[in-house]
Amino acid sequence: MELFNSLLTGIPVFIVLLGPLMFVHELGHFLLAKRAGIRVEEFGMGFPPRAITLLRRGETVYTLNWLPIGAFVRMSGEEDPADPRSLAAQPKRWRFLVLFAGPAFNFIFAVLVLFLAYLLFATQPSEARYRVTSVLPGSPAETLGLMPGDEVLSVNGIDATEQLAPNQRQDTFILKSQSQASIGKSIQIVVLRPGAANDRSQAEVVIKGTIPADANPNAPLGVSLGLNVIKTERVYYSPPAALVEALRDLYLVTTNLIRAPVELISGQLEPEMARPVGVVGITSIGVSLLEQGVFPFVRFAGLLSMLIGLTNLLPIPALDGGRILFVLIEWIRGRRIDPQREQWVHGIGMALLLALSALIIVFDVVNPVQLP
Image (cartoon, rainbow, N blue to C red; front, side, top):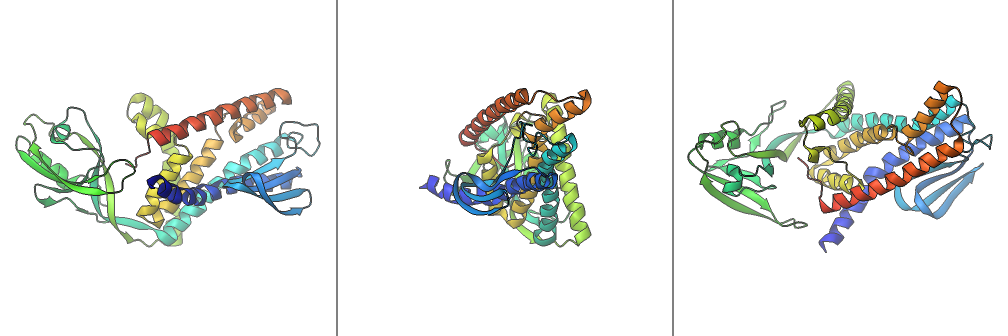
């Protein structure tokens, strides 16, 4: 029954979240291909098998397909230049523009979605509690019995709900101050503990014990914490301010993505935080954010559009970036790589990407994504 409820919630969120982002991506390829004079055989909404043919306009058939996950564009001869109106037969500049248009439309859509999110739905936390995300082995928290997922309600009889003022630094005020004051003394923590996996029930648990006298004064408990917002208030932005916030979000997500490999190698970033996430994980995050409100969900959609655009520009065979790489190589060397070899490279790349996607989906199911 719980699995059925998860699917009932997850599938619509998946369609609403990822569908438009993939549609916009393919729309970019479609419009530039039409502008270049490339023969577009089909523009499909959703993935095959085909459900119905919506209409035929000129040489392009517009279809509705059974798998409601975005869209696709089928152009003549994507790697075969024999047909003069195929993609592969076009000049380098047009092939580059057609391939780049998909990610470019994702970038434009990201700005638009984030702008509207801040203009129409923006909220900010006004009350929050802290949730334990991880417990260090051998730490005082482990000895006391704190567990990942515990939401701190009170410490030593003091309400742990934080009142968050605008631009206030989010910190573990009450939990940290009380645990520091309890070093070498007894401490009582009341938490809201979630049920087992796939169980939405919660129960109050009273945790009592003593924090050792030699505990780290900067982190007496030895836990990592995430903020769980329990109340928000509406924030109003003027159009220029909303645009600034949207561009700031995109700047931050781009720079974080660029820094992630370096921070992962240097140990500044935990591997769990840098794990790849597939459609199951993205849908799970979407469901969690939708439960928090419209603004977090729409903002996530905008950031996700940016990430889809950046990911597709990676120089990996079968992705737009991999195909663009072949165009750039042709530009540099003055002659193109044998189209048949290029087709083989992209075919192998597609097979590897599908295998990796399947592996990530399995990992998302076995080890669900946890929001910090």
